[in-house]
Length: 68
Image (cartoon, rainbow, N blue to C red; front, top):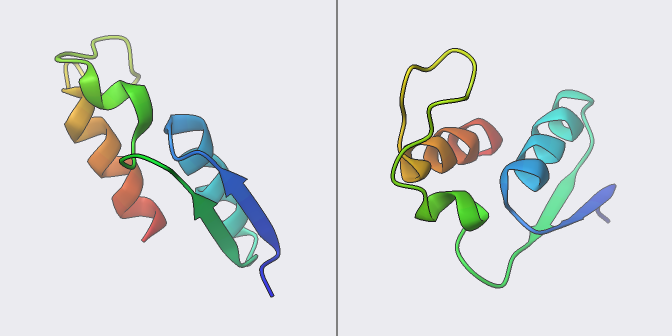
């Protein structure tokens, strides 16, 4: 049985998964497309704290690596 079901794996869904896992809950993420959501189509993200500039794919990969 899964404690938390998250629908969508954009930044919000992946962040929810990170916090749920830190709370030692079991998590299932449902996604019909690719993990990362619409941000993966952004060529450059420059307004994220801790990073001067990062591509949407790099940002999504970093989120996914924290969840796995």
